[in-house]
Length: 363
Image (cartoon, rainbow, N blue to C red):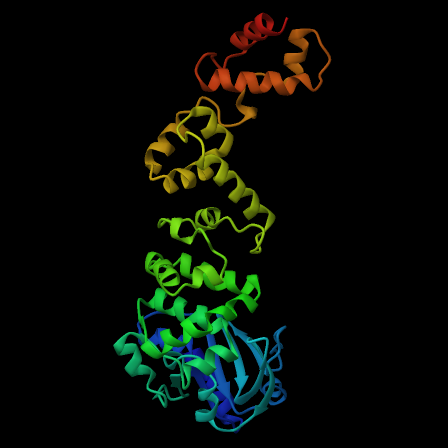
């Protein structure tokens, strides 16, 4: 464990409170992986933590936590609590601060996320998370049916951890998912997409997609085309296949890319004009989706005589001057014609050749 982490825990401990690193950092640490996001649990209240760390901030969704940044490390420090009631199968709406670590751990989702490290670097494992790490199994803490009923996002988190860690779901966890999977429809599409992105970008994405289908989660997530997804390194390609622009949130740039990829997928990728129109990235993604060689697509793109309208040897004003006309909307058609002729090697991208072509074609 890094010295800066031990120092932060000691600061809390020396102020008279308990403090432990818990959750993903500990899990990944035991698996030989690194993380810069660190969850700390303590019996100090947020007010008391602010006295210890005056620079601490309160997160937007305040569930009794403070945020402390030290160098590249991001600490979320949360007070021990019991979550007494939930709203909409997602949000804890009534909680009680407590002083007992064990009781705090019982409210968490999976055993592998319940392992703690104290300020001395000792491992504390009240709920047998290390056993499940060794067994490579995702198991809920306590009643799996209750856990998913309280917070339906845990269903997707279970699949995500099974995917990214290449673990199995415990039988009771899988059974509870099958019973409560309909609750996924009550979650926001934004939160669902966050978990799905992590599944789709995992090295084990193919297994993750298979697990979603096996559990019938594709229907509850309204991903009716999930079975059509073939493995690709491109996250945007997967969303293009899924065709859910009217449901899931995307940035305007993502929307444009998805629309272009879907168009390019229906075209002959190696056609020079299509390569030029859609560009190398979109053409490569669409080609990979079709099982075509990205190397061949890249070679074909690099061999294009022009890659944008700016590469044409003359500009619009010059064309208008050659034709003896004022610049106008007609130039759009002339440009498109020149692009095609140059791309298909029917016309050299040279000033004199273009002048003669324009005079013979447009006068």
